[in-house]
Amino acid sequence: QVQLVESGGGSVQPGGSLRLSCAASGGIFSMLIIKWHRQAPGKERELVALINSGGGTNYADSVKGRFTISRDIITHTAYLQMNSLKPEDTAVYYCNAQDYDDYRYDREGSWGQGTQVTVSS
Image (cartoon, rainbow, N blue to C red; front, side, top):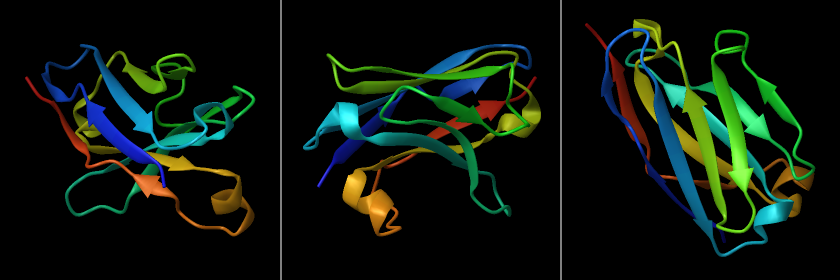
């Protein structure tokens, strides 16, 4: 079982930047699919970005060109760099990791505790 610990949330003005971190333990980090999701009050959870075991990335249309997902295989940490933040980016952001079996059997995998991001003037 993979354990995930997120950090880096906070409050920022529109146009600002934040970097979220997701520290993983208990799995083979390089083989994980790491995803960042977010959930705003009253809205469904949204997949924001993912990075697969080969390093390939994918983004929701709403964040393309503004957010960048990356990973450091040595420190077992994934990141979500968020630039040009907008008020509509306000949400709780969750890190999620799937190993091969999770992917194969369509299981959600492991989740972090979530970190609040607030974009407001």
